[in-house]
Amino acid sequence: MIGLSPPRRAAMQRVAPPFLILLSATMVILGKADQVVFESLRVSVADTASPALDVFSRPLAALGHLTDRARDFVAVYQDNQRLAEENERLLNWQQAALKLASENARLRELLKLTPEPATTFLTARVIANSGGAYVRSLMVHAGSENGVERGQAAVTGEGLVGRVSEVGSRAARVLLVTDLNSRVPVIVEGPQQRALLTGDNSERPCLRYLDASAAIKVGDRVVTSGQGGVFPPGLPVGVVASLDGETPRVEPYVDLSQVEYIRIVDYGLADGLPKPVPIAPRSGRRAEPLPGAQLGRR
Amino acid sequence: MALKSAAIPAPQRVDNPVARLLPIATTVLATIISIQPAHIPGYAALTPAFTLMAVYHWTIYRPDLLPPFALFLVGITQDLLTGVPPGVTALVLLLARGVVLRHRRHFVNRPFPFVWAGFTMLTGGAMMFLWTLHCLLDAVLVDLRGTVFRAVLTISMFPIASFLLGRSQRTVMGAG
Image (cartoon, rainbow over all chains, first blue to last red):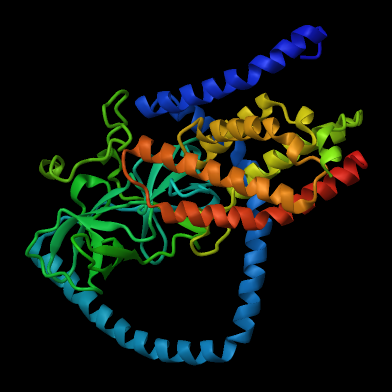
C-alpha cells in the first residue's frame, strides 16, 4: 500500500472490506463443501504457532498451579485423613487385583490366548483449546515428529478424552468425545448393552442406538467397545448420568476443561480410521466409521 | 453533547512505528488469550470473544490503524487454530468492523455507558449471527443457552478490556 498514489489507495480502501467479507464467506462455504481443502493449511498454521502457544500457555498454567497449591495447603488435614482411608481401601483392592492377575495369567496359559498388541504412549501438553460454543477440541504440543498419528486415542489417568483428528509435525488436534462430530462405539456395563456415544457440544454426550429394552441405570459404567477398530475395548469413558427421555447422557470420567497433559496412546489400531473423503455430501460428519459398517472388520 | 458528537475529530497523526502497530498487536494478543486453555470448568465453551472487544475498541478510536486485511488474517488464523470452519471468525470480525465504522460517530468521545451499550448491541448481533451460521453449517439446532451465556460473559468483561486498551492507547500513542 505504501507505493500507491492517494486516489488508488482510497479506491483500495473502499474495495478491500467487501472483498474480504466475500472471501471469508466463500472460505466458509468451500470449507463446508470440502473439508480436505483447508486441512493442510490448518496443520501448518498449528505447527507454526505451536511454539508460541506453548510459551503463552505456561504462565496461565503456573497461575493455576499456584491457586491449586494454596487450596491444597488449606485442605491438608482433611486430605490426609481422606487419603489414609482411601489407602486402606485401595490396599484391599490391591490384594484382590493381585489374586485376579495371577488367576488371569493361569487361565490365559490354559487357553493359549494370544496376547494383545503392545501399546506405546507419549504425554503431551495442551497448548490451546477451541474457544467458543461450537467446537470441542484441544491442541497438543506433539506431532508426527513424536510419533502421533491420526486416529490414536487420547486419554488421561481417568479415562478417554477423545481421538487425534489432525496431525502436524509438532502439534496435533484432539477431537473431544463431547464434540458434535465425535462418535465412539461403547458398551454400557451392567446390561452389557452396545451403543454409540455421540457428542452434541454439551458437557454430557448422548448414548444412541441403544436397544429399546435395555435396562440402563444412572451410574452404569460406560467403556469403549472396540468396535470400529479406533479404540481398544474396555477404555473407561464415563458413567450414565441421566436418563431423561429417549437419550441417556454420559458424564465423562475426565473433566475435559481441566486437562493439562494428555496421553496419546498407540494401540496399534490407528489404521482403523479412514482418511477423510475429499468430497462427500455430509463431510461435516468427518469420515467417522459407522458402527454397523465396521462390524465385519474385527 | 450533541454538538460534540456531530464532528469526529480527525485521528491524531502517529509516527512512532510501535504505536502504529498497537491496535494489531493487541488484537493478536486478544486472539491468543481467547484460545488459551484456562483450566476452569466449562470455560472453553463460554470463552469471551476477546478479539471482538479489541476490534470494537480500535474501530471506534483508531480505524486507520486496524486495516481490514489484518482483521482477515487474524480471523482466519484464529479459525485454523481453534478448529472452527475457516472464515467464520474472519467474517464476523469484518462485518463487525463494517457495522461499527458506520455508527462510529455515536461512540467517539462519548461517556463509557454509550460505548458499552454499543458493544452490547454488537455482541448480541455477532453471537446471533454465529449461532445461525453454525446451525446452518452443522444442519442441527445448536443449544442457544451456550451462545447466550457467552454473549453475557463477553459483555460483562468488556469494561476491563476497554480500560486496558484505553490505557495502552494513552500510554503508547499519547492523548487521543
